[in-house]
Length: 210
Image 1 (spheres, rainbow, N blue to C red):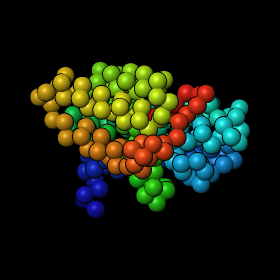
Image 2: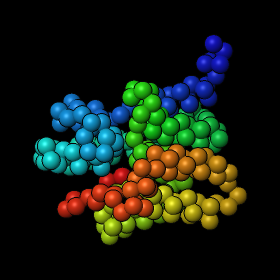
Image 3: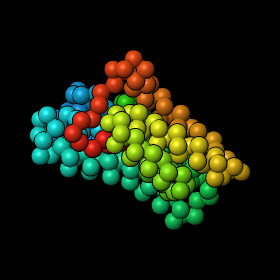
Image 4: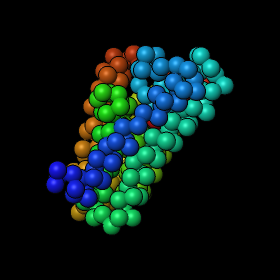
């Protein structure tokens, strides 16, 4: 058990467990009385919370979707703050960021299922590389307003973030960013297929959430 006594390993495990907390599923189930894993796209993120609850309990839809978004963004940041307070190196912080996204996308509480990773990825990247993350948010917001397709908006924002990080920090090791981006792309594989085939759903008459 010496392995588990290593502080860095403990931080990675904490990041994975906290990242695994399926806030969208919990809020929709406890407050909205609906299982979003069995409704809409089946995703546990803010967009599906909004989509499903808008049909069932419209008064709760926006509140719960915004709450889901904030909590999913914040959970990786929380562990990063703990790690930084403990004096973790930049490399360890990046490891924490990656494990938080892995936790969200492959949650231990949902037996390996999870969300798309965009909100949690955004949170950790805002913490680690704030300016490229803000650029990504701007691209996401513009795309969401114009296209009204949540998945495409998220992917365009992710692309803008990755490209701007390479341009702004050419000497930085980008492997953690690439890993996070790859995980998010993998979790969007069904969306990408539907985008190519022209079958991806739009978010109409409401905001498109990550």
